[in-house]
Amino acid sequence: MTMPLQVVVTDHGFPNLNIERETLEPIQATVTEFQCKHAEEVIAAARHADAIMTQWAPITAEVIAELQQCRVIVRYGIGTDNVDLEAAAKKGIPVVNVPDYALDEVADHTMTLLLASARKLPQVMKQIQTGAWITNPCRPMFSLAGRTLGLAGFGNIARKVAHRAQAFGMQVSAYDPYVESAQFAAADVSQVDWEALLQESDFVSIHLPLTKDTQHLFNEQAFSLMKPGAYLVNTSRGGVVHTEDLIAALQRGRLAGVGLDVLEQEPIAPDSPLLSMPEVLLTSHCAWYTEDALARLKQLAATEIVRVLSGEQPKHIVNKTGLIQHGHMRRRDL
Ligand SMILES: NC(=O)c1ccc[n+]([C@@H]2O[C@H](COP(=O)([O-])OP(=O)(O)OC[C@H]3O[C@@H](n4cnc5c(N)ncnc54)[C@H](O)[C@@H]3O)[C@@H](O)[C@H]2O)c1
Image (cartoon, rainbow, N blue to C red; front, side):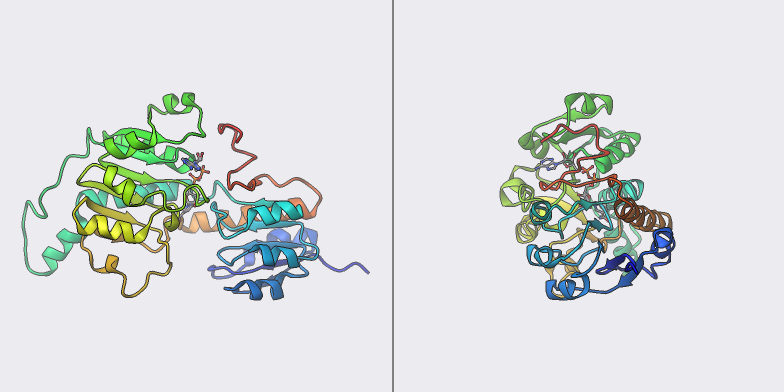
């Protein structure tokens, strides 16, 4: 008698796994769920799994070394920074993500943070709550139309942000050495280098994966190149920004404000200075979320497992540098 296929969900923040179970039923796979936080817990949960689905749990080299028969690791989401991609590649286990489940959501959320920062919504609300009704509050504010939005990374989400910002009359530029010039031109976006991005943008929005090249890319040196009074928005990964350097840049008034959906440390430490800075707008890594995106994420992730366990190729393999190999036609091969 053959054993049923074992799919292990290492951790998740969903109400249930009904969609996954329904999607995996035709291949008669059992779905076992855990809420692992540490590598040892993942090893105990997933050692004999045929496939792994993971949200935030650490899929480290030690975990991967212990996997006896795993044929695929699927990350619920776009970023794969919780998975040791090199170790997985070495062991021949494909790492697969879901690159297209929430692009509009994250682009909408980016614009929400940008608009709320520029219109100083939290500060105005606070004034009203403390009894002040001022028709030109929290000075100065500036017109968005004609101002420059610089995008760090020009992938799927950044392109959607560009389109939205252009509808507000903004000029858009982007820095991404891995994208062909024709792609910038097609989107009416100026292709700029790293220094120009920082020096010329009134708003900088980050849309980079977290890799060893992008870790702490936004540090003291970068902030000191930014226009005084510029705004920063980050809906990508917290680790791309050096938090202490950011706090220092805000404290000395170098930046007018930031909108952050992601932080180096999540959840935020209760004593983080970011919590008490009026020019800091925080959301809780929820840019991706709508009911629609949630259902798409679960369905698409489980479908990748079905593909691999049925002997087919997955649709979206992430290579060991953290960049997507398949289904991402526009990017130069690295
Ligand atoms: N906050 C959320 O809820 C949420 C949801 C989805 C995705 N994300 C994050 O957003 C990020 C961007 O998503 P996407 O769909 O646009 O990804 P994408 O892969 O389509 O785009 C990322 C772009 O970054 C570029 N890039 C990589 N390394 C670079 C470097 N060193 N310098 C400059 N450019 C570089 C790539 O060439 C690519 O074009 C993801 O990596 C993920 O971490 C966050």
